[in-house]
Amino acid sequence: MSKILIVEDNEMNRDMLSRRLMRKGFEIVMAEDGKKGVDMSISETPDLILMDLSLPVMDGWEATSVLKTDSETKHIPIIALSAHAMTEHKKRALDSGADDYDTKPVDVDRLLSKMNRYLDN
Image (cartoon, rainbow, N blue to C red):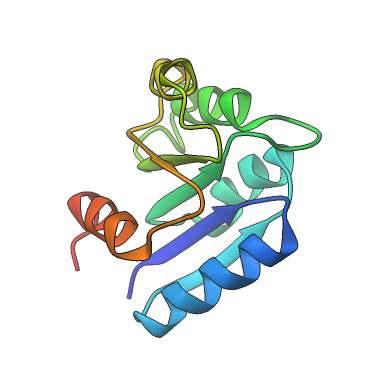
């Protein structure tokens, strides 16, 4: 079973996404801001991170950059999630080190397809 870290400040989004992914057999851990997401990436060693970009304390772009420059976490695939479907958001997310990008509201089937590219399920 793959462990997924959801870094999302919106409680409703965390709840909806975590429930849907747990039904698909994933183990879920969650963080509500970018700093906690970075800390939990080290302590929980997830197989993949779903990173919201608009986060308090440390935004998702910075958190992704920190994770991708740390030898302990740089191997963990990160899929950036944003309600902003603008090209510059995607480019900035990928430039900060995200492995992929998806928009919110989340289309779970599309997201699962992207997740499975990075997981050995």
